[in-house]
Image (cartoon, rainbow, N blue to C red):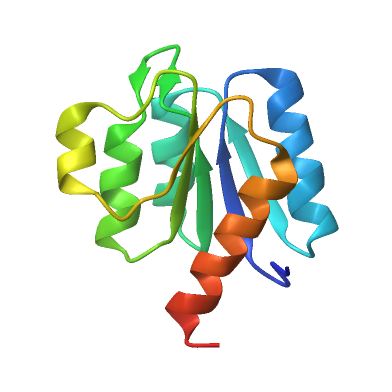
Length: 124
């Protein structure tokens, strides 16, 4: 499992979970971006560009992170969802291939899932 030289957006409003994810991304050779604790901040980080993959919580302080998922999906950026509430039905219908992991899922499991998506998207 490797995220070597990949910039991984972390969208998570629980500080300990966000820290755990950032450490797991770093341990896999990636560069954590964020964590973003709100949809607004996540969209700003995505707008800066250079995001190779993302781990998204759904329920944030200012709403669901579905707008972030929409932007990333339009750019072909692999995403793993990590949520306690599930993905809203309309988003599940639009993004059926996006893996959804229910909290608590170990950070290493999420990073491995994202690394696999990145490997498939890059053809390696």
